[in-house]
Each structure stands twice: as structure tokens, then as C-alpha cells.
Image (tube, rainbow, N blue to C red):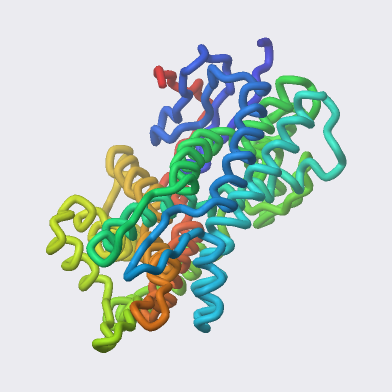
Length: 418
């Protein structure tokens, strides 16, 4: 390739040439180690087939019950749509809305938009709204939480096994398969599809026609282009998205989200996340109470998972982001690389804190025995869900490139197997 496309690392702003790599290899930034792109062994046709299979499994997961629960001669068929319905009826609209978006609307949209985009690249005919569709795909992929829901289902079933007779059903296995499929499909990002379109000659090549040394990469499509001097941002020449050289007021916005999350963290842990109604009375459970209950049931492994996801992770995210924005004496490439690693960790574990919210929602469907036992989401569940969302917005607002703003130059990316 005489003039390979250019790519800018989104975490440190280092400029690289996008050179061909072997199937299964990963190209990483030479400065911060962030994964720039990979060459999948699976063709676009293979990814499209996986999309269709995922859509079919998604339908199975939501149409069939996840478990059959029997108690005192009564039987309930628990399913995720039924859990959403009961949560909405109980008046917990915020919890129902969060769950409906993150584990139904967004995953479904991710599959459909991905199918549409792959088909467009395969046919070598990009529709006029291709750029808008890929922007939507990036958003939906980031907020899709099917793997978290599947783990929440397993935790819920362990908790219910002590109260009633429980039999796993078709929906549970479908959600398990879907979790693995969507994890695989997340590798086909919007930037990966822009690269494929570049290689097919369907869109302008990144870095083509540069006239100055003052350049930037579009955050939506990765297109490297000239950036007007003394201008904070511009409209992308390729996808028409407006982007900034650096995120405007990134620390201020991240601090605002962190402060709101820290405030809500206290009611999220002090107020009950669920209330259990039984003939002998009413019991309320907090997040830590649920961890203790799992431990007492002998499920120490699940208790540890819930404790890490619901207590350690959100608190760690708040503390790590606060440290990244306040500690000023971290200097040098090695320390900056560690800062980038911490930020990547925060991004990676962000959505897993939603585990307890999904556990409560699904328990409401499994324990729907009026007169015997009913579980209703509490105020703590809504507060905790908002904590997770706010910390994710804080991570998205933070700009890790600010610590690297010196000495970037054109280098070829390193390559390793993966």
C-alpha cells in the first residue's frame, strides 16, 4: 500500500499509519498501547450470518420463559418482558425504563444497525444515511448490557432456589448464547466498518489531502483531516459529524457527573433495593444485605461477584476518575501509560455495576405469587441505576489525551497476535 490511511489514537492522539496486518492480529498504539484496529479472521459474510443468528436468538430469549417457578401448588413462568411489565406496574418507572433500554431496545438496535451497515459495505453501495447509522451503532453498542442481564439471571435463580422449586427454561439458555454472540459482535465497531469502507474505496481515505501539520481525527469516523488553527472544533469532511480537537470542558463535565454519582451512591446503599412481601410480614433488602444473603446460602462465588460489581466497581470508578483529574505530578511516558490503563479499566467495567438492578427486576418476575410472596423494586434500585449511568457519563466526558499533549509524531503501530 503506497499511501496507507492514517489513524489517530483516541486515547493519546498519536498518529499512525494503518498498515495491513495478519488475520487475527491486533494493531496497538506505540505510545499508550491502546488497541487501534484488528484484522478479524471472520469475513463480513460471517459477521452478517452471526447477526441473523443473534436476531433469532434474541427473539427466542424474549418470547420464551427463562424459568418455571413452583410454590405451594402455584406456578409462574418468569420472562424478561414480564419482569419489565411488573416493574412498571409497581410504579418503578425509572428502573423499568433503564432495563427496557439497556437490555431490550439497545441490543436489538445494535443487531439491526450492524446488519444494515455490513450489508451496505458488502454490496459496495453506501446509503446517504450511512454515517448517521454508524453513529447510532456506536452509541447502542456502548450501552447494550445483555451479558450483565444474563449474570443477573443466574444470581436471581440462586436466590429463588431457597424459596421455591425452580426449573431453567429455554429463555435462559437463549440469553446465555445471546450474551456470547453480542460480545463477539461488539468487535465489529463503527470504526471497523469505516476502515472496511475505506479499503473498498467507498469513502475518502483517512489522511488524504492533508495541507497542514495541524490535524485531528474525527471521533465519529476516525477520518484524519486538517483542523483550522485557533478553532476548537469543525465539521468532519467525510461524515459531517461535528467534533472537537479535545473534549470541551472535559474535566468540569466529568466532575459534575462524578459529584452527582457520589451523592446518589449513599441512598443507593442505604435504601432497600427490593422489598419482599410475605404473609408473615415485609422484608427489605439493601445491596449489602443481598450479598450477605448469597453468602449465607453457600453461594460465596456469586456473593463475591455481586459485591465486586455492585460495591467495589462503582466506588472504584469514582475514586479512579477523581484521581485521574486531580493528581498532577504523574509525568513521563510510563506514568501516562498507567493513567491510560486505569481509564481503560474504568471504561471496561462500567456497565457491570448494573448487575444488582437487573437482579431486582428479574426477581420481581420470579417471585410473583400474590398472597404468598412478592418482590418489588425499592428506591435503592433506581438510585443505584442512576449512579451507574452517571459514572459512565463521567468516563465518557473525561479526555485521556490531555495528559499526552506533547511530542506526538507519525509512527507505525505495533502488532501482536490476538
